[in-house]
Amino acid sequence: MGILANFKLYQDNDPKHTSHICRLWALYHCPMVIKTPSQSSDLNPIEHLWDNMQQRLHESNITSKNILKEKLIEIWRNIDPNTCKKLVNSMPSRLKEVIKNKGRPTKC
Image (cartoon, helix red, strand yellow):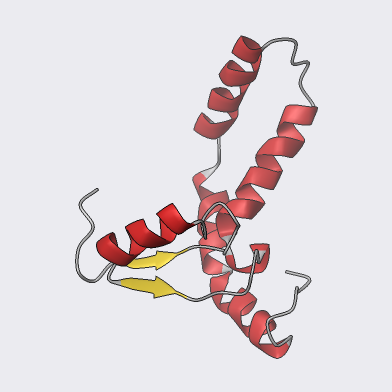
């Protein structure tokens, strides 16, 4: 995957990420794993993007796997770059909120 020595793995401790095989892979392939609160979407901007995509999917009439695939690709390709920028730029305030709440969920 081209992971360099300065790469830091960030994962949200979802059970599928903490399985033995995933932890073993990370041990040998990722020099540093960032410890995070268990399953905290507060610290994972992609979760908010997935939620946005899901909301947009619910507005569609999905009747087959092919239509679902086409709609997902369409939604993904039409994500406004400003949406991603906004999510990334929100990280400092999200981190402050998580610290303030001692790792518990936040309103962010």
